[in-house]
Length: 287
Ligand SMILES: C[S@@+](CC[C@H](N)C(=O)[O-])C[C@H]1O[C@@H](n2cnc3c(N)ncnc32)[C@H](O)[C@@H]1O
Image (cartoon, rainbow, N blue to C red):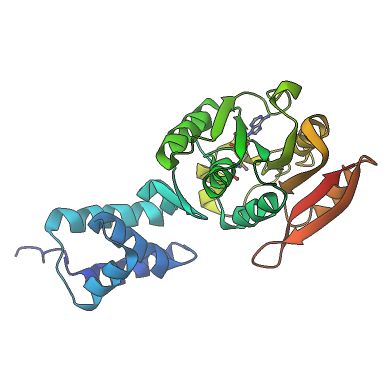
């Protein structure tokens, strides 16, 4: 007896994928199954949904590639590592092993940073990772000058790749420690923005995608998680112009602690919710 051929119809593949991803504990099985289908077909998600509705058959190698990717997603590899890209605000970023996958909540941080950026102004992004924050600002504000700093060689390479991918001629990325890579001669800046590591060293992130695939250097920030944040505040004091804006992302329970790091040089310190209502961004003005 010969084995039944593996299904090749888009609707059957999709149904099997959703079932597998649900059992594996993936948060949005339908979304991920459809996005992976769209990825292997090289079409937008809506087109993949339409092909499934019509019961279209996939070529055998494409169906096999889809099944392989679904298995990897079920093993909790981040969706963005499998597709190689992450959408962030109005840009697409190339991502993969060695770089932090940009998150939707960070889009709100960028919104705050943009509010503090005058026409022809300047911003510096400390710990840029893929370049998500810096390159979004540069893309949305071609009049602005943007500097970004990243210490990890792997992440720095991704950020440089993304600078070319996005075509942000007004952004410059330097490799170095955020504590000392920006000199007074680079500024003064209108905005200092950062999404630094802020997980306390002893904590284990809940999601396997984060635990196993985000670089530890992007997550952990010392005993209370706030060592990189202290460095960010110190740099901001040094390179912001008077009245300039500091905008930082942090854990949802760290707002008060972060405001507590801001001495008498700061005014208008405030913590803001993200799109899900969690306190994730703190802003303050210098002087
Ligand atoms: C949470 S990730 C954020 C990445 C990106 N800004 C984003 O929002 O998607 C923090 C980033 O800071 C970098 N980083 C950590 N410590 C650093 C340091 N001392 N100097 C420069 N970069 C640092 C990490 O390598 C990582 O890329």
